[in-house]
Length: 79
Image (cartoon, rainbow, N blue to C red; front, side, top):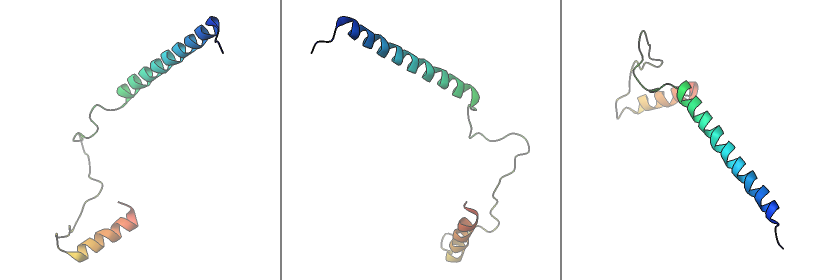
């Protein structure tokens, strides 16, 4: 089965257009994501930042009751 030259050129043109549009859309999305996201999201916050979770009584390494309390807190709050 022979594929005519014109049909082959149409398929090649379609594939080139598809690859070009894909790369162009990827580039646009990449530029937008770099401009919208902060440069360093894990930097120390400025101003009056407050830590969300503050451990009052942190358990000792061999304190099983402390581990159970932390596990219960995890199950209750999901943190």
